[in-house]
Image 1 (cartoon, rainbow, N blue to C red):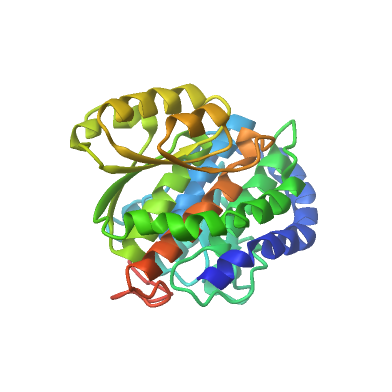
Image 2 (cartoon, helix red, strand yellow; image 1 turned 90 degrees about the horizontal axis):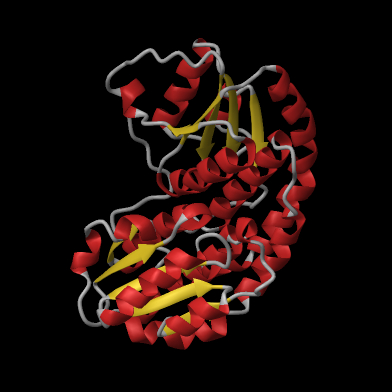
Amino acid sequence: MLAEIAEQPAALELTLANEQSKYAALGRFLKQKDIDLVVIVARGSSDNASLFGRYLIEVTTGIPVSLCAPSVYTLYGAKVNLSRALVIGVSQSGEGDDINIVLESAKASGAYTLAITNEAGSTMAKIADEALLIHAGRERSVAATKTYTGQMLHFYMLANALAEHSLAIEKIPDFTAKALELKDQITPLVQRYVFMENCVVVGRGMNYGNSYELALKLMETCYVVAERFSSADFFHGPLAIVERRFPVVLFGPAGVTQQSSIELLDRLHELNADCLAITNDVEIANRSPKSLMLPPDIDEFLTPIPFIVPAQLFAALLSEAKGLDPDAPRSLSKVTKTI
C-alpha cells in the first residue's frame, strides 16, 4: 500500500499523457448528442471517486449528475429511460457484475456509455462505447490508492472536455508529489491514534468524496469504525456523538468551504474534541490541535487528489502502528463481485 501511494505522481502523469487527447474529441461528440444527464455507477473506492466526480461535473458544466443505485437494475429489474444520458462505469478491475449489468441496461435504453478502468481487457471495457484507462499498472494492495486518484483524474479530464473553462489539471501530479513529503510528519503523528476505535471524517464540496474514502480506508486497514459527514450535515445531529478527545479528521481547503470548516473547528474546540485537519489554509491549521499543511497555492478545485494522499499515508501507517497488515485486510479480496 505504501509503495503504491508513492507511485501516484508518476501514474497520474502517465494517465494524463496517454488519455487526455481522447477527451477533446469525446467532448465535441457529447456536446453534439445534447446530453442532459450524467449517471455514474460504481462501488467502494470507485464510488467515492464518483462522488467527487458528481460535484465537479455539476459545478463546472451545469449538467445534473446522478450516482446510480445498481440494485434498481440488478434486484428490482427496473427499466430506466437513459436515452439522453451519459452513463459512466467506474471500476478498478472492470469486473464488477452489478456495474456491468447497469452499463448493458443503459446501452439498451439508448445511453452513451464510458468505462473508467485500470484493465483494458476487462468486461466493462468491452461493454462500454468507449474505455478510458487508468495507467497505474497493476494494483496489488487490496486498499485502492493509485486507482482511486486515477479515477478522479479522469473526472477532471471529462469536466474540462465538457465545460466552458478548463482547470489547470497538469499541476496535479506535482501537487501530489508535494503531498508525499508529509510522510515524515505522519509517521510519528499516528502514534497519537494507535488506540483509536471510532472517529468521524468530515469534508465538504470537492472534498466530500475524500471523507468517504478516508473513512473506508480506516475501516478496511485499521478496523476503526469511521463515520463520514459533510461539515454542514455534521451540525444536524451527529455532533451529539462528540465528547472529550473524540477524534475528528477534517479535509479543510482554502476556498468557499473555509468558513464552514472554521465554524466546525470552533464548535469542536468547545467540546474538547481531538481534531486533525488536512488543509492548505493557515487559519484552519491554527484552529486545529493537529494539522497536515499542504501548499497554499493549490486551488480549491485541485485539492482533492493531493489532499487524499496524506490521508492514505495516515491509514497505512496507523495500520502498521496498530500491529496490523494494511496489505492483507481480514475478510477482503481485491475484486468484489455483487449483484
